[in-house]
Image 1 (cartoon, rainbow, N blue to C red):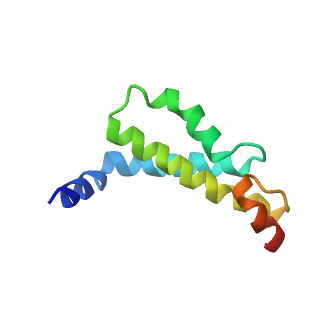
Image 2 (image 1 turned 135 degrees about the horizontal axis):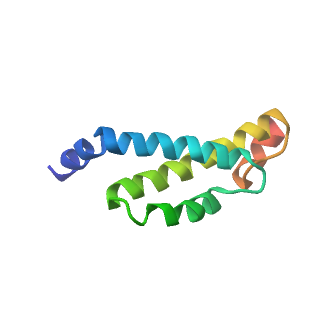
Length: 93
């Protein structure tokens, strides 16, 4: 019963907007060579102190996942991996 309650809470509009904003910000962070997902989460950690705990954790997770995806954009297009996770994508893409 707790999983269904948590899922219903995460699908509320407030948390969905935080996740969308975090994903977009993470993609931008990951697309810049030299900025990793860990650095993106660390930089945004100060902005989430005053937020609701569930909203801040969902935003930080979305930044992390978006940055990992964003690293593959530059790895594929200009053969420069944005993150360390995208090195194999640079070789194969």
